[in-house]
Structure formats: C-alpha cells, structure tokens
Image 1: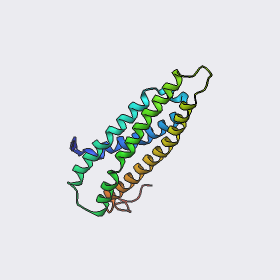
Image 2 (image 1 turned 90 degrees about the vertical axis):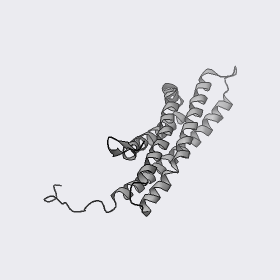
Image 3 (image 1 turned 180 degrees about the vertical axis):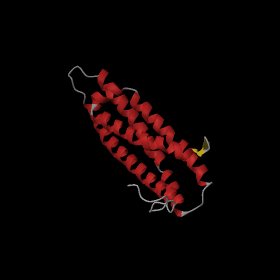
Image 4 (image 1 turned 120 degrees about the horizontal axis):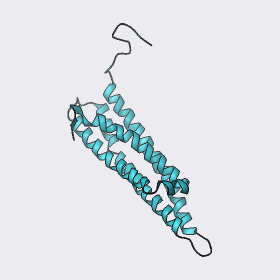
Length: 169
C-alpha cells in the first residue's frame, strides 16, 4: 500500500500505530496486574495485540515506499532506522497478551483441591513483570520513532513567524 486517496499511506497508517501500541500496552499492563480486568476483556486483549502487531509492518512498508519518494537526509534515515525496531516490541506485546489471556483463563477454571495455585501465581507474576517491561519499551519506542518522524517531516518546513497577516494567538 503506497497511496490512499492521493496521500502517502504512511502518514495515515502511522496514526493507527501511535494509538494502538500505547492502548495495547496499557491494556496489557492492567490485565497482567488485575486479573478481573483480564477476565472481563477476555479474548479482546490478544485480538487487540494482534491488530497492533499487524499494523506495524503495514505502516513500516508504507514508510519504506515514502522514504524512496522524499529527499534523502539524515533525519529520514534515522526515522527509518528507529521504525525498523518497533516490530519486536509489538511482537512482545502480542505474545504477552496471549500469555496473560491464557494464564488468567486457566487460573479461573483450574485450582487444586487444597486451594493452592502456586504455578498459576508464578506465571501471572512473571507475565506482569514482563508486561510492564515490554509495554514501557514499546511506548518509549513509539515516542522516539514519532519524534524522529516529526523532525524529519517538519524540519525547516514551516516558519516560526506567521506568514499571513500576523499572529492570531
């Protein structure tokens, strides 16, 4: 996908990534820490993470097309390099969303006669710690990529003074 209604697809698809990655990260953290939230969301959590995961390569591929159609400079190259690093984070969000969904679902239906759930608790604790790390990493990476993309797109692309009859602010 290269153009959508005459506009580069990357500038449209990037909005999905900018919204979905932090949303998925937040949902994952909440579900990993709060089992009742995970039970309520159910399969929505891994489905959200799957859509997020799919949006990353779509946006990256559209970005590669756009990179070939703009002037080559260090800011564009830096943005492209950073963008290539988001897929592992999105993959981590997806894998952990599946693990949290599975572990919470399994804990809800299982339980030993003596009431102990030690393995399920250990899996949930490990998933919660990993979820916090991966969610934070993914959100920070999206921020860094977006910041570099904004700099690449807008560097020297606007005037700091109003050009049409003065400042209306």
